[in-house]
Image (cartoon, rainbow over all chains, first blue to last red; front, side, top):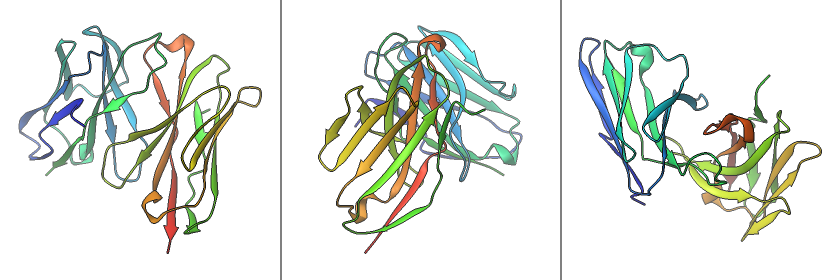
Length: 114
Length: 111
């Protein structure tokens, strides 16, 4: 399924690096999400964008900076990360509020901070 | 109090067995319900939506009990390939775009 595409699939970065995760959805959805999943832990919602406006910021540290230039693209800019930020980062999209439709996830980016 | 709660398991069942998972939710303003499946180190994938009257998809049956605020997933004739973590997801009318995930229930089907 290529509805939601994330790049890169794997990323290793040092604590002083700056990198960006990219997500693109081809489903015509209005809402996009970033989730974090650490090893053996449940999904944690990080950010939600609806029609390119950030509607949720779940107390995420400022070293994570989202950007949503249009309804099809979502970025997560990373800088001065910590080793505990190593996790699977998942992008997802949905039609938006008022629709009884599920989330569609991308394949995820497995991030390792050294 | 968690919005969505699941028994984390693990559930270890033999091939061919029937297994059921329950999930409880805390907010009566619930709107939509879903079961997702997540394989190790992969993204969650939609298994099935849950409808008010209950619904079936092959060996999988989902039920909703609004009065008791829980949903269930029944898997009949378990296959080895059913081994995964099953996530319960709920949305609420008063929280816009939010999807609330349970912690997941781990299932291992044993030969």
